Length: 551
Image 1 (cartoon, helix red, strand yellow):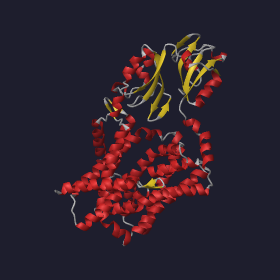
Image 2: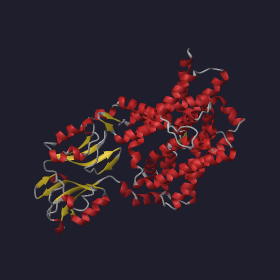
Image 3: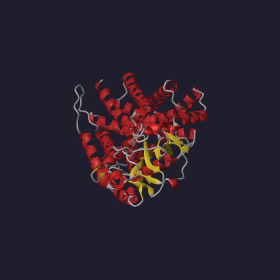
Image 4: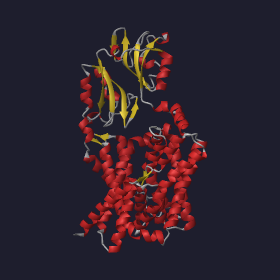
């Protein structure tokens, strides 16, 4: 067999062993995808003893391409939520998550300063301690740009030393915070449902009879609550006549309005307008029809609801919009993206025209447009290769093969589409490409670093590296966990989701979910901080490398 064939065969063997190891769990917690790294170490140990030579060029290509594929698909996945998570509702959680990243980075600087540890080793420990594989790739990229050689092996070994204790450190911090504050889980769950659950519940529907004489003759858009688009009126019943009202439709006493919005906004409108009434759905339906429609027509992508003018042309209103599992009240300025699910209401004889314009082809959701994928990857690689010259730095700063594709993917996912190109990717396809990418990357890292792993652990500095890694994991999590509880007054279940999300660690999220099953507090906090944290975890090793290089 050729060297390339042997190399590919061993990579496949590493993937099989590593994925098998990752499925083993102790009380619901396992290595996950990190098992591939240890699979590579096991295979490399025996190939090193046998003297088997692998093709270096093949390994290098597979490692770099796997990293690019992984960070690009991560960017596409978190892109729509990345910018939304920076808004006011998520500022507190994201601020605390960023503080965890900052404290971990400061500990890296302190360790490197006081121990004079090699830069590649300390960055490897950092990446393993925060259980973030893209950080390892980003660190390798920037060190290569700085001129360091033979870094894959040392970074891979130090990463592997710190990784298991990184997972344990997250779980230990959750347990100690619970013990220290004497948390009662049922009370925390009830408190969360009471204080924040109503903000996150799905949109509600009510029927409201106009009894306020001050509103008689006013246009709908002039009534408080409607001008801010927090509430949408999808039907108006006046005597026996039923219609879809517009903004300039005049409202009269005894009109019955069918309203959609979140509970808080609906309550405000009810206090202004009148009283709740119970009307059978069939009695306010008339000749109207409602339909959930998936946006799949390229012609409407990126266009605002006002520009599409369905209300003016057909008398059809878009009452709700579901994007990535989040239900929203759409406004006139809301732009449509591929894969959005909208709820439309209108006359039965014209609503099919709107459905045809929107697309509603479920089969398109299962397809992957490969042209945008490679277009985005190409742009990302180009962006990552552009040097940015900063005064005082010894080398030009580059985003690299980890940062470039990530930034481009975040931007493209936020844009949604350009012409007929759309960057929506079915979740199953995104997961498949992401898993392939990370498995390829970790397989190569394991093979390159496994030859000396045992000797480093038993005869070298392996135990010392484990200790430093545990400190990088544990200290920031405990400090921020205490701050979140004492000063930010966060719910304990939200803190658990915050800690897991700050490490972008699915096994830790599984542990947090097990604390209170079928409760949304931990997953909600995890999802809120995950996009920003993933970005910071990939960028931070590059900034640390440049900073420590200049000191």
